[in-house]
Length: 360
Image (tube, rainbow, N blue to C red; front, side, top):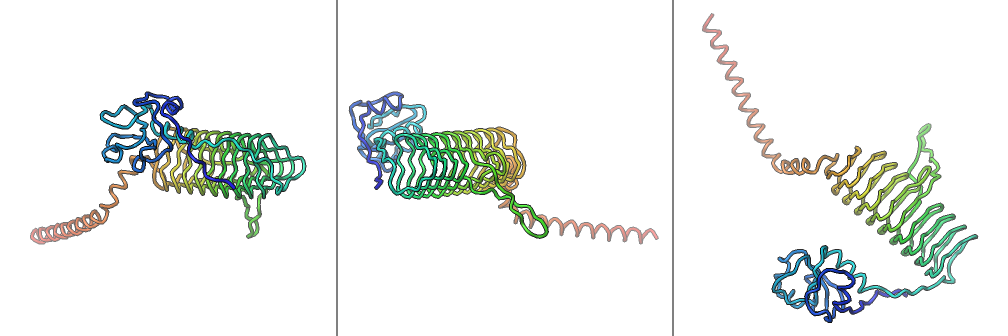
């Protein structure tokens, strides 16, 4: 059985050596875990992004703080770093580092012909490996994982229970797939003929490069031809749909329930907010930020922030949103102006008729 890791106590000297920065306080002080600032106690490490968060009396008893600059009159030891949140993430990994314990290959797996398995793997019961599958070194496959024929799982990858990697898909090193994710399902391709939908065979694969992490229940469709590609370093949240022949660039962030239609390409460092939808055959430039619930129906140039459906520059969207609550009042004012205008027009016509009648 897998159990939650227990934190390993660390001295501030050890933490300082690991995260860097400047140590303020006793290097021999010990912290035993990490916690949020509002829940941290005497044995915990927390991080601070603003001094205003230290106003609570409880914060005076915190074991140690990661801060962006030295805080005067703070009784807790401090480690001053450039990015406290990043240092906290690294420290948490150090606290909860689990000693390597390889389970080996369980007896209750299904293995096809020509399977290659690297050293120091952990393959749990209930795993299915198709023909000619390649599993790299130090890979962990939890129960219920299915790997289809001719697929490749790179070194140090981790597949949680009930992940499916269908035939002809390739995963790089240090890939993490959370439960329920499906890699290589058929792309949604049909052609209509004589009133019926004819399926177009989806003959391509999926390529996921190094250091990619996919959340739970993500669907990445195989390409019609070639590959659907998720490039290195990208992180994808739960319940995201990536259609056939999509290319997700390096170091993208896709938040929950994003949907990307077929053959759309995202550049590097693109960020897409939750429930945003992208139409097919688009080109999204580097470092574009797409706000939540946006509808993207056109290609986007690099280095911009967009919002809305259809998308517009974020500043324009904010101005439009500011007007919306005023619309009922504006509508009433327009009606009043129309009534006044109609009255003036009627008065003008009556005056003109009166003058004409006097001349005759």
